[in-house]
Image (cartoon, rainbow, N blue to C red; front, side):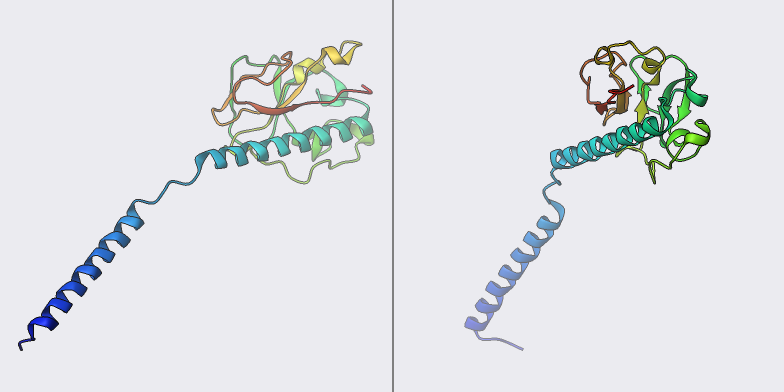
Length: 186
């Protein structure tokens, strides 16, 4: 079947337009802008900060009830660091002492005896990068009279997975996320 010349030129023009749109749609599907990675990083850091604050508050409630800090069985100095669930982070400076589980103090009464009034946290979860939250508990072993001299951190190792903040540090180091554990009234 033969079409008049004007019909052929219209069909040809339409085919070119359709083909152009098909190519553009295909390119748009392949060449999408990558999601805003910086926005995701900030959201992960905020999530980690919120969790660190919640853990610090739970330890404060534990201390208020038990009249001791979570350093070991009934206040003995056993644990150099406490951790939640998840993959263990690396440490720039490994804490002294043995590791202990936060759940022993905040969710289960393995350490405090009859004065324990928990659970102090419903759920302990890994940080946004799948690693454990850490408390540098070796600083709690010998509390100075002036607690302002002491810095005890509830930490997430951050995106790089390395705990770079040491117990005595006055500020967070590296990409660590955390909060200083309030010790007033200790």
